[in-house]
Image 1 (cartoon, each protein chain N blue to C red):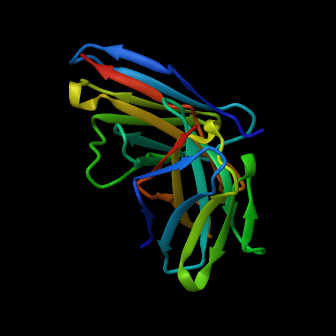
Image 2 (tube, each protein chain N blue to C red):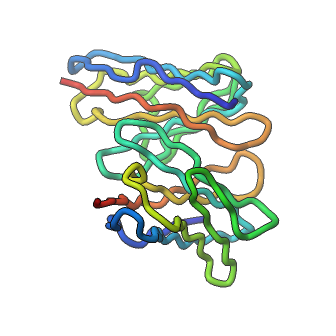
Image 3 (tube, chains in turn blue, purple):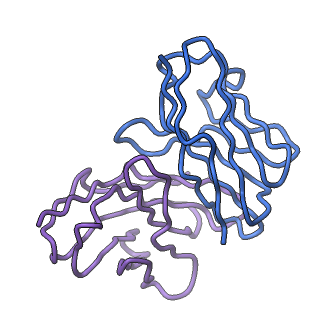
Length: 114
Length: 114
């Protein structure tokens, strides 16, 4: 149990376009979802925390107008990178937590902006 | 505030040798402690966790870790390394209350040579 999926696993987009990444909890209800960013050979950096039906809470230094997070249901959260630029290229990982508070991680999405 | 320090960005062992990955934490409240493994281009997989109770925690793939409050440590060990253990390992801490965030260490890359 406690499976989290992400889609797509890999995406290439052109500079200036927007890209949406989905995070789904497949077999449990996730009241809270987390979005992380990971640069090559570095640790995970928390970007934002979202509770179902509420606005996301962004970490300091993360542009909320650039990284739009929606958590419309108990099984789905989306991260939209708006007007993407090459410096947004990274590995994005989501996690989901239910009543146990424990975070279960998705497999990640590799974003490349050309 | 909480923090995690992982000593050594890279650890190299021979196949069959003891694996020791070091993790020290700081937390103002009793912590929950985690070890995760990440294979290239994949998400995080939970190896083991300490919440309460027994301080020696056994996880998957033969790994174990011991919570030592007096040393504020949670080192990860495995008696005999396998080639398949080569991966990035992250230690993480969070407060033992609700949806508090995970704080990750910078990670240790485990290299296993034949």
